[in-house]
Amino acid sequence: MVLLCALLFRPHNLPVLACSLLIQTAMAQLIWKELQYDAAQTTIMHYWFGQAFFYFQGNSNNIATIDISAGFVGLESYVEIPAVLLTAFSTYAGPLLWACHLVCFLSSAQDRCPASVGHGCYCFALLRSIPTVAYIVLVTALRYHLFIWSVFSPKLLYEATHTLVTTAVCVFFTAMDQSHAASSRF
Figure 1: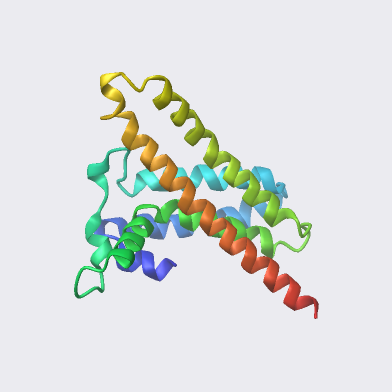
Figure 2: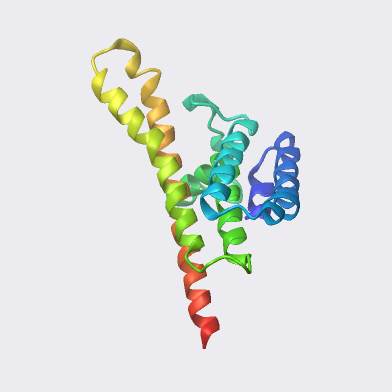
């Protein structure tokens, strides 16, 4: 995933990727293992760092900040599904890297219970769904206001897509962790 991020990012965002990886390593080695946080506390910190790196990449709640050129890296012609997937990956690379690091960190800790990965992913999905639900209620309640469709609707689109992408990755890595744990028992 890191290599794909490095390929898709613009050159001025590569230091952001390097800083993200450096912070992940430092936090995992120096803070989370030493203080022995539980899965929920570690998940909250991963969520916050993922949100911060989303904005550090230059993203915002404006549709115009989506870098669609990342969707065409390596493609000779327009192919819809890979272009959409690469664009979504490039846009949400910061939160995705932190979500993947969360699953890897929770599954690699020796003193954690086997359910910590599932608990961490549940907390992560809950943290992602709270803003989405809040914006759905806000947009529904104020649907006749002029600024809903120009200001809050793009934010709702970002939140829904962000929730879908990061939760799908958490579910994928949780399933991979469970299959790895099941195969290592035999």
